[in-house]
Image (cartoon, rainbow, N blue to C red; front, side):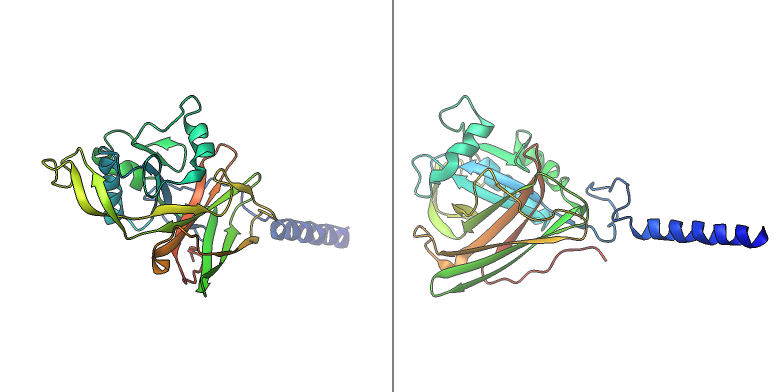
Length: 280
């Protein structure tokens, strides 16, 4: 009897040990608030700021000013300026996104801005800077790392996604941006000290959307989106004809859940090789 009991205990501990090693992710809720302590294996969480704007829009400078202030507070903000209307930087592929945000409008009421695609930045944005910053965190269940190379006017880009949690029904959006574009900007605010002049001459437009390398509403992520897995999407294309300066190109990649909300995003300069921002 004594030997039988010992064998039973050994079998129990063996089974218990095996069951523990088969757990792929603990069933706990990760704190992704802005001041949360980093959790090992999780990734830095960035906030996406999609700014629907125009050089002709005098009130849009309120949003661009607010974005500048967020960038002064954190390096975890990822802005995208989507120009539309009678504008030299008009993005032709805006319709599906406009229809998603304003289904009953034939054009965007500007300025319009969204945080993580679905969250309205409370007006006036310049008095609510923390709202954007507070959507960043030390912890996200997925991380993004991009590698790009520009050779002879051809771009090769790898977007790598690594998972610290299990996901399903994810979509990915990848943008190509250009910064350093100089063009006069209408201004009806006093935020740039130019309220006595309705136009800011030679204004520098940054983070301007030049091309969406995926469907602007996202492409389905193909591959296993499970804990410990990495998925890579590769793009190869010539530099878009609209781009004025190849050295000012950058990329933004973000992952969207079934509610169209961004889980995480990241930006990358041309010819940059990134590693995952993973907590040790």
